[in-house]
Length: 204
Image 1 (cartoon, rainbow, N blue to C red):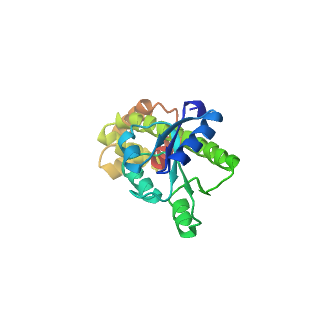
Image 2: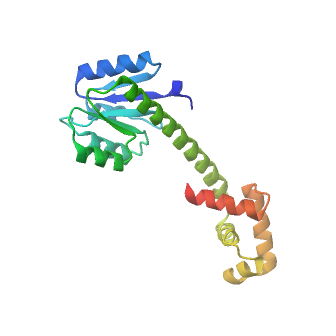
Image 3: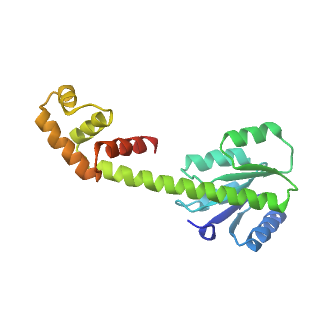
C-alpha cells in the first residue's frame, strides 16, 4: 500500500479544527474524510480501508479513548493519533498504552502532525501486509484434513514418524503418507520449512 492510497479520517466536534486539519493534510498530498461526531464516523466505517484516524480526545458524545475502543470492537485496525487541547497526562498514558501512534496537544506543530501521520501510515501498511500473509497461511492450512493437521503439528514439534505414530495410535507407514500430503498441500519443501510455516501461522 502506498500513502497515496490511504485516507486520513478526522474526527473532531470543532468544525474549524476539521477545516484546518483538512487543508493541512490535503496540501501535504493526503486524502481526508472529516467527521464532526464519533457516531457519524462509526456509521461510515467500512471494511478494511487503508489509512489512519486522527481523533479529538474530548468530544461530548464519546471521548477519543471510547471511540478507539468502539473501533476495535468493530474490528477496525486503523492506527490512531489523538489530539487534545488539554494537557491530560493520565489520558495520554492510557492512549499510548491502548496503541495510539501519538498524542498531540493543541496547538501542535504542523510537522509534528505530518510526522505522526507518516508513522501511522507505515504502521498501517506493515499491519496489513502481516494480516494478508497470515490469511494466506491460514488458507493453505485450512485444506488439511483433521488428521493431517494433527500430524503437521506433531512433526513441527520435532517428533519422528515413529513418535507421531505412537502418539496417534497408528502405523509409521500411515504417518509417512500423511506427512507427505501435508508437505505437498502446504507447498513446503522440507520439515524445516514446515516448522517455519507452523511458527508463522502461530504468530499471526
